[in-house]
Length: 76
Image 1 (cartoon, helix red, strand yellow):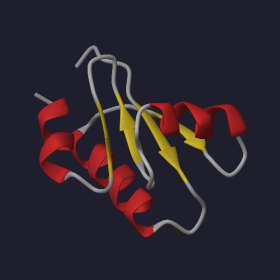
Image 2: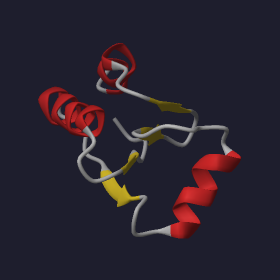
Image 3: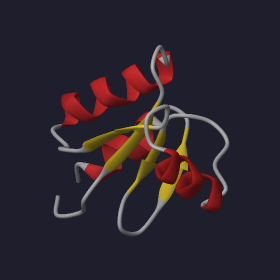
């Protein structure tokens, strides 16, 4: 896995926690960005068209919500 993965999260977000747990489970390393603390990051995910956390972004794609099948695909 050579892609850089960023997970944009919010505090108290259950789907964010589930996403990070799944990434850990499949062995994908990632960087966490707290959208409540980073206005530029919030604007960035809005320009990508996402309206809910978490947002997972790689070099080639991005998605929002808890998507276990997409997370597992990152580990392949």
